[in-house]
Amino acid sequence: MTPRRAAISASLLFVVTGLLWYATTLARLPSGFTARYFAGANQSNRPTVATVDPSVTSDIVRRNWPLPDQGLTAIWDGYLVLGRGGVRRFSVVSDGSSYLYIDDRLAINNAGPHGPRQVTLAMPLDRGVHKLRVEYAASDHPLGVDLLWAPSAFGSLTPLTGRSVAPANPSPSELTRRVWIGPLLMIVLMIIVVIVGTALDMTPTILILTPVLMPIVREAGIDPVYFGVLFIINNAIGLITPPVGVVLNVVCGVAKVSMDEIMRGVWPFMIAQLVVLALLTLFPSLVMVPAKWLGG
Image 1: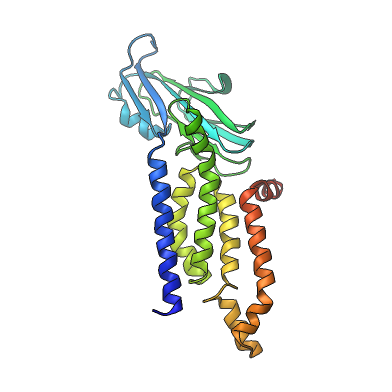
Image 2: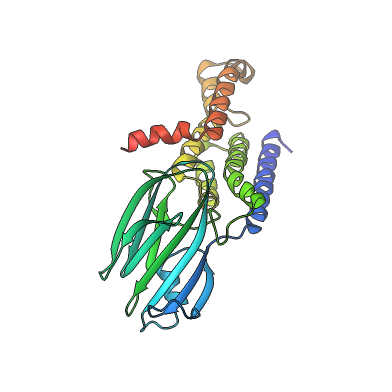
């Protein structure tokens, strides 16, 4: 087996092992919102439907509600686990009255009656657990409600789902796992991309790994902008990393020098780039704060 094939095989094995470890870890963590659906406006009776919804979306409301011609009142309770503090954006879109409570305080008031309307709020949240409650009421033919969020002040709004939300207040051990799963995942992913980058060029690495890793990143509640910046920096490091090292081969051909000579001059720069990548991985604010300034 050639060194290149050996490097590719080892990279793929590491990718599979890392993803299997992460998948089995996620499988043991319950996620979603505790949901209760009531017929009409009376919440004192037993709920018509009681379940755990992965997110609060109109599609899920229409799928769960068996009486589409009748009004309903629905309540979702969940616990948002944040690995770091910062400004988060929340948005509620509904065709009827809807409310978002964060830590038992009214955060968004989208009272009706009205047609589909969106109300957005940005607020700072500390690291740890935050109780969420969404209330929704529609008199007839309910279209549903959507709870969206952005894990940063300027990120795009997407449905609040994934392992960031627990249906019950997490225990201390579960909280530790939920808080650290994001940073540990980023470390594992950066190691995977570094190894893959030694065997593949930048373009195929992006085309192959992006559709595989992005769903996992979103599921873990990692900001896609943060992951994207580190992913591209990591791929740039791969351009000067043997055995492929496209830039190294170009320099060897232009300068008429051997790969050994090139590597002696490249090592200090490669080490410096790896140190920068490690700092950005361990301290996300180094990426997110400048991105916030540039994003306005």
